[in-house]
Amino acid sequence: MILQVLLLVIGFIVLIKGADIFVDGASSIALNFKLSKMLIGLTIVAFGTSAPEFAVSVKSIISGNADMLLGNVIGSNILNILLIIGICSLIHPIYVKSNTVKKEIPIVMLISGLLFFLVRDDLFVKSINEVSRNDGFIILLFFTIFIYYLISIMRNKTDEDSDDMAKFGIGKSILFTLFGIICIVIGSNVVVDSASKIATILGVSQRMIALTVVAFGTSLPELVTSIVSIKKGEQEILVGNIVGSNIFNIGVVLGIPVALFGGVPAVGFSVIDLIVMIVASMLLFLFSFKDRKIDKFEGVIMLIIFIVYYTFVIVG
Image 1 (cartoon, helix red, strand yellow):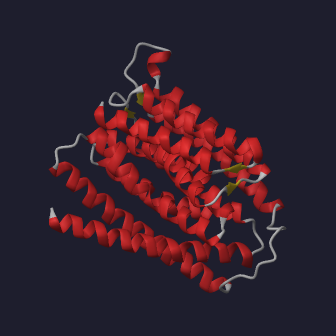
Image 2: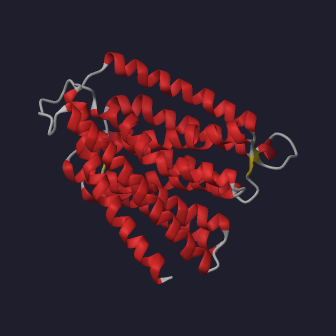
């Protein structure tokens, strides 16, 4: 137990330092190539911080721990919005661009709603709830629409509203970004492995470990990267990271393993888990739509819902 706690602390240190380097590198890439920081957040940062979820999902489905895969995705998406956006809004109001409110956040709501209907087979036929291989292909098909959207804005949009100079040259920016991703993945893997072992020693169930320890552990890259981003004033990277990560989590982290290795049962998850995931994305939209920012009060609402939900998970 003492060794696992020590590894947990070391993992956190590597993760935090990696996120700091990663944000600087990603921001410099955007400035060097005159790209929107939102685009960088939706792609490089989102994909990089979703790498731990993907690694855990592939490992889970191969080892036969299907509950871990689905719980990881659902839990991470809830944490990304309710916890991470909630915490960051307490540090500084989060300003959201009009295009993000109109296009990118609705994509999160749509793909979250899609997952709800794909999981809840009992709504249509008397069947065991699962995400089947065919469902995996449907998710990947939907994800290709998002990829097409990214390609379209990559062709047409640059960071027209920034006169900032890049902190590093192109080569150093790419090197720092890659090094940051490596540190994030290594740090989060150490945290997840040690935390999971600690939870197992304490006799916690697979579903609870998936929705809490693993979901929190694999969301640490998003959490730390977002906090670093808000402190550095990189709000577009923050929002792009969360929005992109939630889409990647369903489209890639869940879609690819299921399509490749077969379906996963969802009998261990209640409808509440899925509803909270959808409600979180709707709140993100409503709060952003109101005045293009998420303030402290709205952040507190998110955190209260987060606490109530996880109280239900732990007690129930």
